[in-house]
Image 1: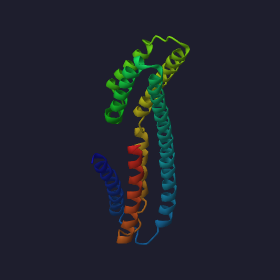
Image 2: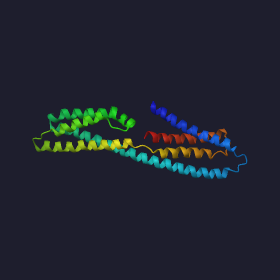
Image 3: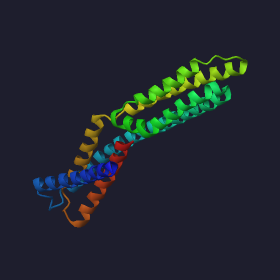
Image 4: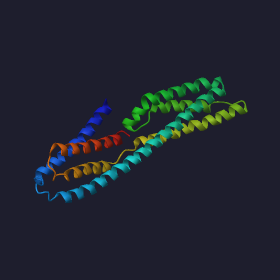
Length: 227
């Protein structure tokens, strides 16, 4: 529900900004009954809109790269959890029950609590870290009695450290945010593009086209806000 309200606010706000900027400039300049300003206005609009689109495209591409990197890290983390989980079973009953329980609790906390907390505060769940630490200590306490158990213990230690490293990278990705400079440039681009249309009369067709421009720009900004 919150995402829907945010979407309505961003798209509606962007569209309202476009129409308001256009109307204010049209009133201030009194329109362009003789059509003398249209050629220059069109030239300026084209340049501003091109730069505005370039800024949006570059930031959108950067956010998508970070999103793909986060997906990759999540896959690495989940694979490492699975490896430790099944290696504990292969090690024997003295490792299976305590380590698997800690990992089950860890996964539950990450899915049910940590993802939401990371998006809201930019921080990882301390409860998830506690379960990771619990599994780590259980692995350290293992006393291998043969080469098989020695190998499994070493592999579990490697994978539990991989989980920790993936968590750190996930937290770094979660704290990344789009610079205020970008938002200033994005909003400025919307306003300057809209005011460039002041020579055109505020009839239904022109207002519809401006609204489409505002809605589309709002959709892009919404995607950047949610990534």
